[in-house]
Structures are given as C-alpha cells and as structure tokens.
Image (cartoon, rainbow, N blue to C red):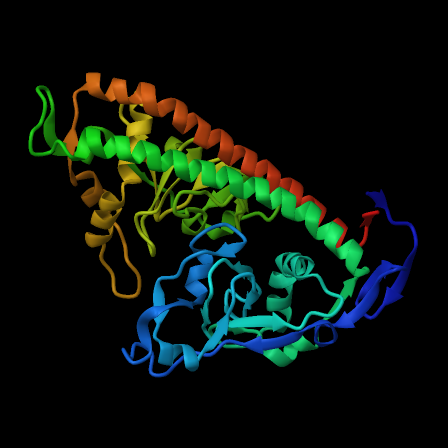
Length: 407
C-alpha cells in the first residue's frame, strides 16, 4: 500500500486520478424484497424457506445472516424475492443502510434492497462501501416520519467512486481478512461458551432434584448483586467527553458493542461506583430484548439506566455468575418475568429473587478453576476483536476514498 498523490475534483469530491465516479445503476441492478400479505397467513408463512427480515440483521455481529426467526411456504416464496446464499442485501427501512451477505438461501422482506448483474463492481468492495457510507446515506436521503426508508430509485442514482476492478478486489481482500479474524475469534468464543455451558448445566442444573450435601435451593441474590445503571442527565453530555455512556444498545447477546452514542467529560458525584465499568464486567439488559448478557471490553465506560451490572458477591464466583446468566433456560425465565406493553422491562428486584441452585463454596471454587481461565480467554478475544475493529475502521475511509492506494 502507498499514499495516493494525484487527485481530481468530481461531483462527489476529490478522488484519485485513476478512479471513476459512477451511478450505482451503472454498476449493478437494484431491486427490493417483497412481503406476502397478509402477514402471518399460514398459507404463506411457516414453511421450510428462511424468511429474512430486518430483525435478523441484528442477531449476530458478523457480515452474514446465518439464520432467521421465521420461514415461508412455497406459496409465500412465490410472492417474495428468493435469493441464493452469497447475495448482498442492504436494509432500506428502520436502521437503513446496513449491508449483509446471505449465508443461507432465502426470501427477503420488503425492508431489504438487493443487487444483481454487477458490472466492474466487486460485491465485497460494495459491501464495505455500504458499511462506511450506509449511515450517511440514510441520514441524508432516507425519508419517512417514523421509520427511515431508502427507495430503489434513490439508491440507483447514488454516485460512488471506484478504482478498477482489480484494485477493488485488493482493497476488499485486506478488509475481508481482518473481518475473517474477527469472526474466527467470535466462533472460538461461541465454542468455548458452549463447552462451559454444558459443564455448568451438568454440575448446577441437572442436580436440582438431588442436591449434594452443603448445597441448597436459594436465590440469585445469594451469589450475585444486580446493580442498575445511573439516570444520567442529558445536559451533561459532551460530544468530546472522555467517558462513554453504555446503554441498552451496547448489550448484545454474548458480545459488547464498543461504540457509544453519548459521552461525558465528568462523572456525576452521585453516580454509584459500580457504574464506572471495567474490563470483564458482566452486563444484563433490562429493557427491550431483556436477558441479554455480555462482557465489557475496554475502559472509560459509564453504565446508564435500564442496564445492570452483575457483580458476584465473592469475586472468585465471577465465572459462575456469567455462565449462570448465559444459560438459555435462565434467559427464558428472565423474559417470562418481564413486563410491559410497548416493550419488555425486567425488574432487578425480581431478578435477584429468582430461585437457583446455590452450590457449596467448595464446588464453586472447583468450577472457577475450570471456567475462570476460559472467561479470561473470552475477555482477551473480545479485546482483540475490539482492536481489529479499530484497525479495520481506520483503514476503511482511507481505502474507500483512495487516500491509500493498493498496488
């Protein structure tokens, strides 16, 4: 790679001399998904073909949509748009501008745009163009009073700068390799969590009807403190503040989103100490998609309300705390006690009162010897993912704007 030195002015700004500026419609065909109506009709829904909706984009932090919550029948498939695995799609409503590749064959909801018949455009390069520009395009062009929407004509007429196809592929290859490593780390973490989850279930769940000596049926509060976040005043927000504000959006199912919308320069005097987060803290979502649990990675984070910090009463029980709340059955229990009409809300008080098997400290210490090194590996992998994301996101604008030329 080398720094570009010769540029030209174009309708979308300055680009390297060797690059061209094209309308999307000159580089590929743009289409929109379709949704069978009425929604929920068993004639159309509940079959064997994956039904890909916007919500499926947020199930993992990867480039791919690998599974869906819903399916369509053969008749539903005929009333939608069926795409093969490997197709690039971009959300056109709600959180507009999010690109994903399909890891499954399936039908796409009308909240997605799709692309075919590429001409001198690498689909992976186009993916990264959307990853970098999607939010800007949505903020600038999307319309809709409640939900932002990108229509097909608008996207067809977007102008993008591209180098020759060979350089596009080299650019996308650099970024793709970084994402490969990020997703490998996530798969390793998933496998480690599955392994420890099996051990946890055998040791602490399956013995409920035949407890060993010194064990008891107790409550979450016997081993864990569930501490809610702080209600920060928005008047304290500072775009350039040192401290980043962790909200419900940061807490995903098994991973922590490091980017925050708001920040502060100073810590409020009345803020509890547990709200100043540190690497490896365990967070629990209390609103919306309740019961999601993740590990903090990074520093200078402050915990906002509607998220809880799960603090083991005995520090050596941190791994037990994490894997208890990561158990699928336990998460289902958390969802079952949540309340709310517009959105679900989980009470920290009720969470602390939930019934669990409370092992002897001797058993907890034995589990810690097995699980604590794995928990440390999870945290280290999350930190490496964060650093790789920083590297990728620093390269992204330089490569896509031609500031760095790949030879």
